[in-house]
Length: 332
DNA sequence: GCGACAG
DNA sequence: ATCTTGTCGC
Image (cartoon, rainbow, N blue to C red; front, side, top):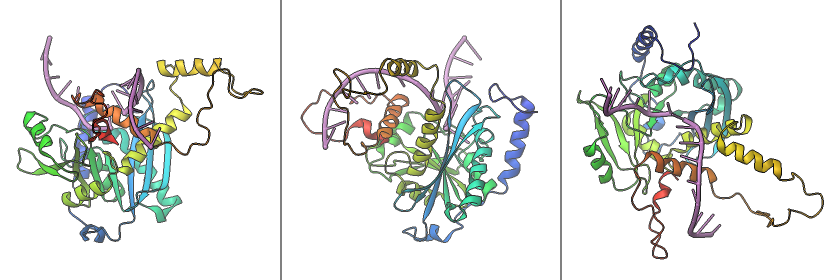
């Protein structure tokens, strides 16, 4: 009865999934249940978790699930667990949780067994909460199954209940001024399903924050903003970076053009230099350099330039004069 | 046939 | 979700 990780689930499966979502939905706790959520400075909040799943390009059944815990408000990683997993369900919009959530629950359980003292007081989840076709996105699903406060943070607007990424929506985005600015996402039903959040001053694309479990929308938005050193909140960003890094290091990307080129370069070059140091025209690369400034951040910002609008200012022709706020820092 | 489509 | 180019600045 094991589902293939690729291919569309049958209509019967989708009906079962819908019933499961409806059943679990009754267990969502709305509103703030923790003392720190009521405090203007989040006093008492010490640990914020983030989860993410990264995928193997050529393989539709393997992925890496990561859970990280960060100190608050410092946002330093104090726990990480990355695990290679075998996917059992395909991605279907509206049913993301059935693909990812089993592994996320397992990561939380492992943490509670090994390091219960590091259990996060709130979890930021890549995806939506109640901003969902049936009001039960992955952040609600994970929240109910773990009973941890959860916040849904999506990078794209899920167009449900009349919400549309149309010109009016884009106007509202452009009207956002400073980091922390928001506008409500009101469905046809008249309910506010979530908030669009400008996560920092120079971010073009907003985040779409919605409630998962045991937290109010206002607190969810304010906390998400407090977690943003760059566009993506640090807990999710660290989980993303670490899960991708795990895949890159263990599986590489066999077969990809870039990997093939990298491999042939690697084979032609001697791995050790027994005598003369680095070969003929080999300037000593970086000898005593400290950790170079977040290389990962640059990758994220390029991704934004891809799925975002081409951002007409992305030229380098305006040399010399001014360096206002480079458009490519959007994801930093 | 066409548009939509969290991750 | 995944891949991808090249460039500036410290």
